Length: 168
Image (tube, helix red, strand yellow):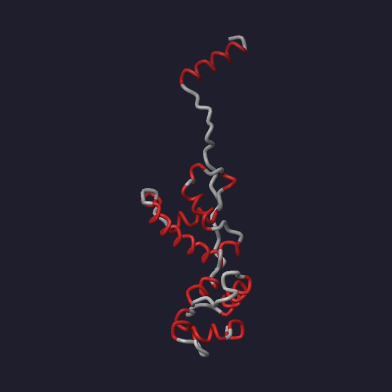
């Protein structure tokens, strides 16, 4: 990072890794650091000033788009509107987040700020699950919204029409 940011890095963090950085990157693999560095090079936000340890750790973490998952806002919108989302538009990762990490009965009754906080945690766990090679559930077939509900009278009328058609 000193090579990339020079005195800006040195004045902020020194020339050797400090405790904040060594502690902040615990559990981050070399592959994840490579991902973070790659994202850092593409980032407009950090062209002039280096990220702090939290920002860099976030850059190293798996992202939904890395695995073909919806971004956070789309996933949250799907979860909130699950019953109204068309079957073909539902993503298995959103279903996984809802089934495995959220008490949906309680969640639907929360204020939006708290609901987003809980979903954020669930979504990060789901991304980590997919990044670790975990599978996702199939979206179950649902009862179509438009049903032809036949009443008792409708059954009787249908039977009468069939009997008339066959001459009885």
